[in-house]
Structures are given as C-alpha cells and as structure tokens.
Length: 244
Ligand code: NAD
Image (cartoon, rainbow, N blue to C red; front, side):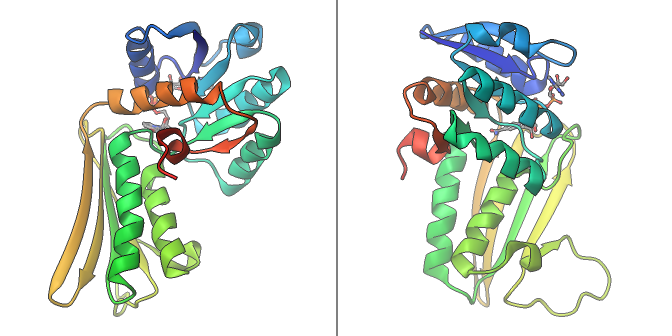
C-alpha cells in the first residue's frame, strides 16, 4: 500500500487525483492539502507527496519532503529557472519525479518529436502551438516548454535565443535558427499540443489532444507507486514508463 498526500487538492488536478486514487486499491490518500492547510502536520503519515499547486508553492513542499525523507511527485508547472534549480537540487536527498506532463500519449509525443526533428533535419522550420482552457495561469504550457527544449536540443540551439513568442510587426523573414511558440487560451480545453515541421513542399504535424484530466492524474499516481521503490534521484515520466 502506497500512502499519498495531495498538495493542491482543491484544484482541477487535485480533484482528479482524489477521484482516480479511490479506484486504485494499492493507494491510500492520507492527506488532502490546499491553501491554508499545514502539510508539516500530516507529512509523517505519507510515503509520497504529489504536488499540483502553484509554482511558488513547490519549493517549500519539496523542502519539507526532503526534511522528512518523503518522495515527491511534481506536476506543477510555471517555475522560474531559479525555482527549478532549487527544487531539483534536493534530488540527492529524496526520490523525485518531475514531469510537465504525466500522460502516456504526451510522453510518446516527446519521443516522436525528438525522432522527427532528427530525421527531418535543419531545413524544416519548427513551430509549436498549444491551446488550454481560459483559467490556465502560466504560458506557454510546461508541456510546450518540454517540446521546445527537445527541439532546441536536437538542433543544438540556445532555447532562449531561438524562441519567438508569437510574432507581431515587421519581424522580417523567418530564419532557420528560430523556433516559434504560440499559446492559445479559451473555453475548457484540457490541453492540445501540435509540433509543426514545415519545409518547401511538405509539412509534418504531430498533435496530441487531452480530453480528460484523468490521463494526467493516473500517470501521476502511477509515478507515485513507482517512485517509492526508487533511490534518491531526479526522474521523469520517461523513466516511470520505461521509455529510456
Ligand atoms: P488549479 O488552479 O485548478 O489548482 C491549483 C490548486 O493549488 C488550487 O486549489 C490552489 O488553491 C492550490 N494552491 C495554490 N497555492 C498553494 C499552496 N501554497 N499550498 C497548497 N495549495 C495551493 O490548477 P490546476 O489546473 O489543478 O493545475 C495545477 C498545476 O498543475 C498547474 O501548474 C498546471 O499547469 C499543472 N498541470 C500539470 C499537469 C501535468 O501533467 N504535469 C497537468 C495539468 C496541470
């Protein structure tokens, strides 16, 4: 039996995690924490904390996990580079899974994106388009950022220099050293991502569309069960799924 605490339990993902966890007999929810609750009071009961809250909350949760030697699954996105570095520095103390997307389909998209970028080569222009519901707070999405990191890695580009966030005004002709990113917000879209590889005469588009948050919740719960068997270290969903 793996004992879990959910941080951000009143949110959209928190609610999906609570609902999905009840359908997995090997899991027991021993705490549901949101704004105003004290994680320190209940953390001793758990094997692993699952964080889907807000970027500024994650470091405090991770530090508490490290202090109490509890594993942590982090699904929250939108961290600054400084926040990310401080969080991942705790990997020598506890096992942690950090993933911008816990769905099996999106992790397949990550794999396919790398392959396609390698096969198609530098003549294909790279653009990423994402769409999410109107209540999403960060942009571009964490998943889109992971896709951009994969593309920049294959092309050997510095991502910050290569990125073009939308385009406006007389921006000039497109160069081979740029990667476009376009964040669309509206309605109740759970999460759509498309990677476009465009050349003269042909175009490849890889698309994933999530229609239920359960796909992320079940992935995060699977990660939690896997993580309690692991040594301290930093893992991602590709490790959990055995895709490496
Ligand atoms: P949401 O706004 O519906 O829920 C966030 C919850 O966290 C809220 O209930 C809020 O009160 C709570 N919260 C905020 N600060 C807190 C704190 N300091 N301590 C405890 N609780 C706190 O958001 P959501 O749609 O559930 O998404 C949550 C996060 O998960 C976002 O960063 C989102 O991008 C990310 N997300 C990740 C994946 C993935 O697969 N990795 C999938 C979906 C969403």
